[in-house]
Image 1 (cartoon, rainbow, N blue to C red):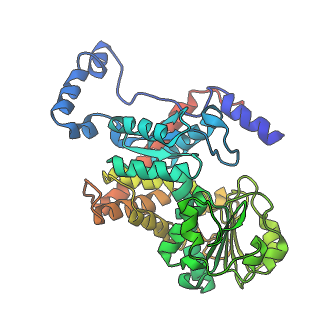
Image 2: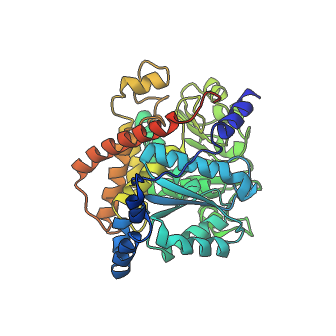
Image 3: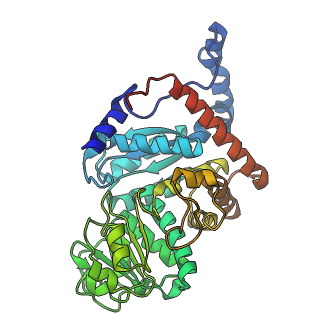
Amino acid sequence: MALKEDALRYHSAARTGKLEVVPCKPFRNAYDLTMAYSPGVAAACREIHADAEKIWEYTNRGNLVAVVSNGTAVLGLGNIGPKAGKPVMEGKGFLFKIFADIDVYDLNINAPTVEQVVNFCKMLEPGVGGINLEDIKAPECFEIEQALIEALEIPVFHDDQHGTAIVSAAGLMNACEITGKKIEDLRVVVSGAGAAAIACSKLYEAMGVQRENIAMFDTRGHINKSRTGMHATKVYFGDAQKKEYASLGDAMKGADVFLGLSVKDAVNQDMVKAMAKNPVIFAMANPDPEISYPDAKAARPDAIMGTGRSDFPNQVNNVSGFPFIFRGALDAGSKKINEQMKMAAAKAIADLAKEPVPSEICDMYGVKELKLGLDYIMPKALDFRMLEWEAPAVAQAAIDTGVATKKLDMAQYKKDLRVRIDDAHKRMKMYLDTYDLSMI
């Protein structure tokens, strides 16, 4: 009850919601207004009309992302619609800004069909630098994203799919290093067959996991060759299965990895005990995982256990991905976010976890030290160094794969990112200091 009351007060106190639009040019006098609007604005309009690429120079398009949702699959809440989903989309904008200094318009739309969402996003392209699709149910989300990637020349990214996949892939890379297991030998059991589960499984396959070794379960059971009436995204994994499992528990016997993107309490301690040595368990049902961290560790102290929660070790959270992926894509002028950019992001996250962790980050989490091991396989969500590691890796991958329109001096770019985020935080603090936040 206290959490609910605190959250409602947080969202309603001082100024309702979590985002505000503020000017970034002066408005000291009448002449400033002629610059911002009429007649001065016409000069910028004419330049862009003569050369459309000037839009990146004279507007905010290069730092603006549209977070678009129809509210059909809101985190842990289901199909609650665009109005009820708006606090989440505002939250995405909040995270984009504080972690990567990216501006966001959250656009919550009455558009339940694939065609409606696709057409809406196509109409947005002239004014935004990228589109973050959010909380759109499967299988429609796959069709929407693919159609937009093919149609648009700005980055389109469905975070529910790829954000989870990238961050969990980073964790899996380090889990294999810690346990000495080889990616190509892993047997993976997946509970859930929605957008995130499919994207995670495909990225794991790209890393080297054999598709026949990925046993996926939906509400009807094991996805295999005998099943009919499935969407193509499920058939892709079902057709590769050489064995049919009677239950989730049956599949988990001897499995190396459990990936949960389904429902609370789908897994019990006996199922965890039956897994292989040093099992990797990513139980990411939100807000309550398939099995709790304490229960999993009590059953298997040798397990590498991660959840979506911030109150236990190894939080697998999208915030470690999407702000920095878009930062790198925008700064490279990338037309796409491709598979190489996603893999570069995952590797950057994994590599950062091997670096010494500054004391101020440890202090945020009330620990003396953090170093690679069973309870630290990826950087903490509040480790702002991810900006300097991940964004350049993504930008470089965009350049290397030919989807970027800009060249960057990476050494200087990393320095500029640190200055940028520090300056952004100073500005945000000034804004917040003007409000009475004592109620929060």
